View 1 (cartoon, rainbow, N blue to C red):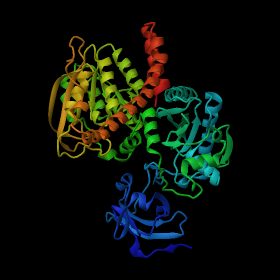
View 2: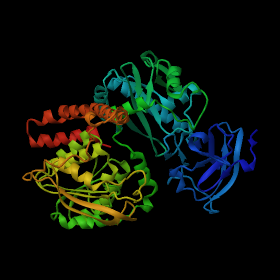
View 3: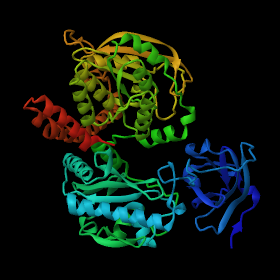
Length: 609
């Protein structure tokens, strides 16, 4: 029996839902009886006179167009806060909250729009469990890694032997035998290569976080996340942001659990691990659960492992769900760049996106190689190039936060018969400082013999809105870029600013364009300083004790930045060690044919999507 709260206590609009202020438990949202989303009013909402107001997730908003029966209830369905038809945007036609194949969609635990297990058949769930068992067997028996189920898979197995309904992927973890972050990352690099050799499609998400792709009989692909776990100085860390006290004895040797009728390796003490991951109330279903991890642990993991594919899922969703909004014709920047390049030259489209400009350059007689870190973008680039008549389109994986990937791409482009032209529209606005440093490093390697790097980006100026897509692209200071480029040995030979177009070809009032060269006979200006000046705080310049005390927060902040930078060096050491061992040592014999084969092999085993 379900109890319906008073109609005035809840509401559903195009922008948000409202539940009574007395509602503190998770709220489950269904459309026509199918799960679509869940939220925690206190965490996700804003308190007002009418109660808790919670905005629809951004990934849902474009699809909220039509009429459906909306139900807001507690997890068990006993307490119903709202139940009735809603015509979103005033549209009386039936709302279809489904993918292109007609499968129901929902917002998963990571905030992404996907198919969840509650709308997946028993036979498919068993297939996922069997695929998970195969991944564990490969990791344990073939790769030599102490792997077991974790997170949602472990939770579902221990609770009732079934997958969590609002989950959408399989989760594994492994306890590393190493206790130094750089060694943990190197171990993950080895795992990645060996898993590819066993036939798995692998994508690296961070220094110790891999994603395996499991094809399903219904045509979709489910991800199996493989999270690294390790102890450092007595503290346990597990990718996914968890840290704290958990004894090694709780993790190994492995026990076993049953999931969808399939036996899987599990931690030695599953209940202790679940309490560590989800807290003391892990037995109580909570589809809106969000962990609160120690800030210090989260920052350490981020510093040591640092994601190499930040925002990649959001970019994939943008290309899949907003394809109609993405322009198909060449950009005005491509038209501006093309006359500045030699005829029939090689164009490396860095951040090729939908492939709109790659295809146009190919049609103009250029050989084009697209680079991107989004799988959806790489597929679109290949499709566009094929439609333009390229029988063997080249679109390669390149995550600029991965030094190995940047060095590999730089080596490949440096060995081309003629110097390439590097084309990057909108790219620098998607990169952080470390990733931009890798872009300059790649450019330096590829352009020593000639050629240019062409950049277009949304530039900074007071009072301007954020560029689109929001949250994925930001404005960049031209002065900062020029200082970084100069420090990296580059030379800006052309610069201009003015009105331009954003990712969706909407007007942007302030866009900058640069042409950059790395000429071997031109010395960079050694007087050009860094992108920003560090504050020099001299004790002698302080006149009294209070001013010294006032400077302490700055000193602490600077110390924190230095410590964080040192942590990030662990991943860089691991990346460089991997490149030296796998590439530079074998390349020392200077056999060109062997070198080309080695570069191709390294890309296939290390970076292939």
